[in-house]
Length: 401
Image (cartoon, rainbow, N blue to C red; front, top):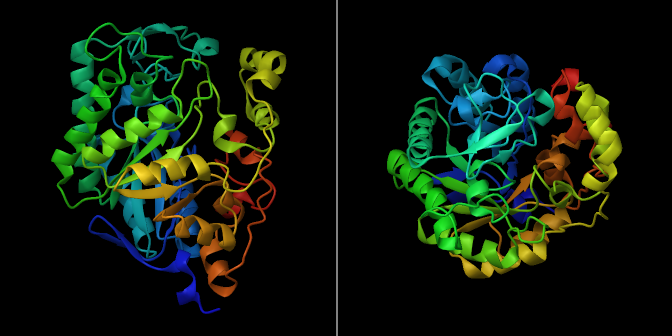
């Protein structure tokens, strides 16, 4: 079958940005930016997918300010790093690949020791990520803090345009800062930012409006959301429908419906084998290792993997919004891609699949029924703490990235 007859390899525009095919590298924290400086390894990492044929790669976790970094090795979208980040973006784009930046803020979930004071989120309480690092607590953001966060997203958007990003992906999910306002599990506020879903949406919609005002109407903005946190009292699938309707009405160009949270239920994102063995392999903090050994099996249970495991719930969102929709979750083969696109989705984001097979688009051009060799063992998840950065331990030599 000729490549042009394979729908996944057909071109499509996202707002005014034309993408050469429907395959996008999903954002994954790479851990290749020591002290926040992008390394040559990070450039080579993304060039590998560019050379493999993806239409666009996503630089994972571009913190909008220092307070938004989970740790000191995450990128910060700030003028202090202008030349380094511009070199990263332009180095990838020279390989016929668009570049998206995943705008993130950790909120109350942080182990960033460069912070002055406690991390801040929707509500105060325990800082689960920083607990074993001596950063035990987090504070609730004041109204002034909230205004400052909106400004941080606006300023970061301006910066990211200046260094050449082709698209911006605002992270509204997975338990990070904006999701902490959306979720009833982490938002216990009594003011206009807490209570009902309309109030929970107030900050996320302010952020989207600020970013849109900065980048203009023609620049593509994507939103990653969590459909369900998988916890009683947390966000569930019906909530996500309303969240997506609100984002659509506010002018988002595309929505990426994911699942679970990094803070409470990460296995809903991945499914497959537990990520516990991989986490233990690279965890250096002795207290955290003890906690993982004692509680890890309950925290990170194996969940049966099946192909396209988020498709049915994502279809509900497809029926509810008019913007573009980007599928993510267990898409591993040309047949999967065709089924997803025929169901009305516009693009497909790939994470583990591309880590195992960075040349997947090229292989798909030669064999439309190509199936990735990824086994969903989830060993790659633990490598975000590896000195080599994220990679597939089974099929890819990290030093070759």
